[in-house]
Structures are given as structure tokens and as C-alpha cells.
Length: 143
Image 1 (cartoon, rainbow, N blue to C red):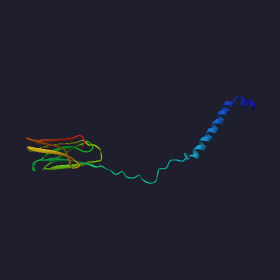
Image 2 (image 1 turned 120 degrees about the vertical axis):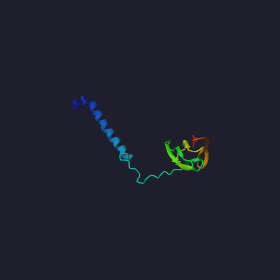
Image 3 (image 1 turned 120 degrees about the horizontal axis):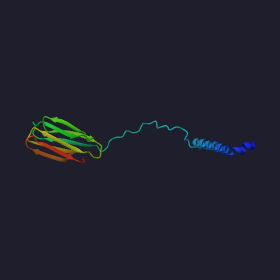
Image 4 (image 1 turned 90 degrees about the vertical axis):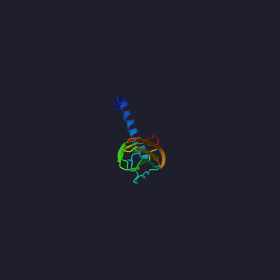
């Protein structure tokens, strides 16, 4: 037997080291409770409520019997097109984003047309156009 140990002593030392390492690691895992699976809390998370809601209002003004088309940007920057058959025309979009690009363009069958952009009821952009087929354009880069 001494001859066998003399021949395979390195393998025997490695096997003893592995057994000691496995025993130590398993003992540490049970000591710090890291052997148990993670269980999430049973209570649901609180709902996130939006604060600082920003209202952007687009207005088109002119003679009451005017009709035409209007294009404006929603809160995601998507172009929305609509028609109007009487003035004043307005639409309001709301967001909690810190900044919104606000843009409105209107063209009508009248000689005078105007547009306004209001953010939280505060006027930030205004334009009036005169002439045949008047077109008004309002832009606010930091609504």
C-alpha cells in the first residue's frame, strides 16, 4: 500500500483538497443562508403616479365660418392631421415629459388665420397670416 501511495500521492492530495473545499463551501452557504432561492416580496409595488403634468394647447383662430386643415405634433412627436369647419379650433395634449416639441400648422379658405401654442395656459408661440389661402405656423422647441 505504501508503494501505491508513493506513486499516486499527488492525486490523493488533490482529492483531499477537493473534499475539504466542497465541505467548506457548503458550510458557508448554509451559514449565510445563500443556499435558499430568492423569494420576492408578496406585496405589490406602489403605483407610480405622474407629477408635473404639462398641458400643451394648440389653437387656431380666424373668422368663424372658415374651414381648412391643421397638422400638429402629439407628445410623442407624431404628426396628427385634422380638419376644421369653424373657428376657433383647439386641442390639448398632456404629458409628464420634461420637454416637448410643440408645432402646429394650419391653412384655411380665409384671408386671415392665426395660431397659438399655450403651455399650462401660458402663451409661448403665436403667428398670424393674411392673404388668399392663409397659412399660419407656430413652433415651440422647449414646451
